[in-house]
Image (tube, rainbow, N blue to C red; front, side, top):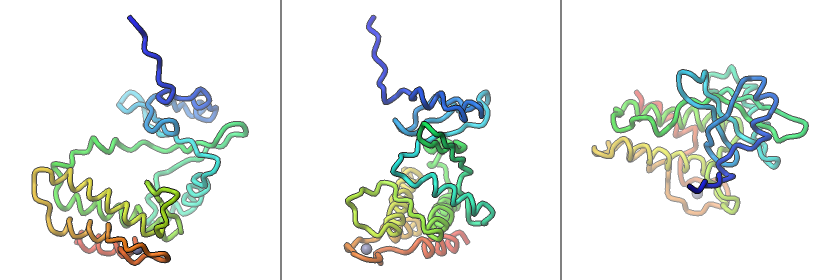
Length: 215
Ligand SMILES: [Zn+2]
């Protein structure tokens, strides 16, 4: 029987497994979430509180941004996951945070409109409005060659994420008009603005309307 070689991208690097602060905290990473940067501990009743660890690239300001957001820990709108920045003299920094739940294990098909609108509120109010108020853009999926207004791009990305969630939730049902309309408002219709983008609402406006649609 031939033994398949292990894909190095699916292995957790030795320096991560031996990171002294992880060992001191008893955090034992076993699952690869996004190779070669993000891993987590196993989920389940026998494994304690699950954690996720992510390598901070040397060119990234992510660790500084997290430390800055933590300084606003008491702000009511700050729902950032509690994240510790582990620094080492010889290795890259690591971000360590609780692993809340696997997103795709949520049963969107059984969600009510109220639950879905609450997700919209959380994403726009908690996810974006707070970050943008602190002059942080999330920029997931944005390529370095993209010249969008970064804050507007975040609203566009939120619209795309909500569109996917709505498709899961309403796979067997017709989407309510309020869901379709809100998502389309966030996605907007890009006209190629070279300065501040006016093709979609700001995060603050999107949050305001998501609150009112939640009643
Ligand atoms: Zn625009």
